[in-house]
Length: 231
Image (cartoon, rainbow, N blue to C red; front, side, top):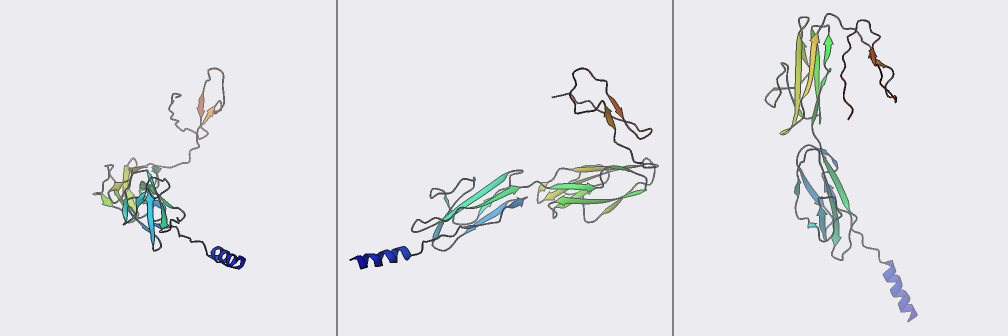
């Protein structure tokens, strides 16, 4: 009857659509400096499918059963995508996390400089901030067996002409940064020297040979230069 049909239509159309929540991937997107253990969780009664190459997962993708490693590749990235599908075939939205594999860095403050004082206070820092920093103050290459940095230290320059080279390296686990170097030279007096400039002006198109002068407004300044051939 029309009444029965209307009742059935109302009952079916009033049934809420089944919604499957997107799975949750941990750890979250961030730069990392070592292997990560990836865990994917979802609501009960679903199957989780995932990929590790950035492609969208399907029922032909990997079936998640337990955590798996995201292995560090220097300077690389890894994108994990996952979906959850229930027994009726209803799929969630795609969840995604991208891991950027960072390379630790280290810096020395101050940079190389001439100083008139008999000492320099040196501060080392790194990215990530919790990396272990090792340093030398006699110019040798630092390793993870060199002096471990904990606080600012003083480099002594008792005599004019003394020169000390500080080198530093940062480690995250067994992963090293490039080596940073700063050299400090003791002089009688430090003065401000203006940057040199070119004549005729640079960054201009010329249609013949040009005689170039390099000038400086600081009196008695020595100017050093290098000619780099055009590529």
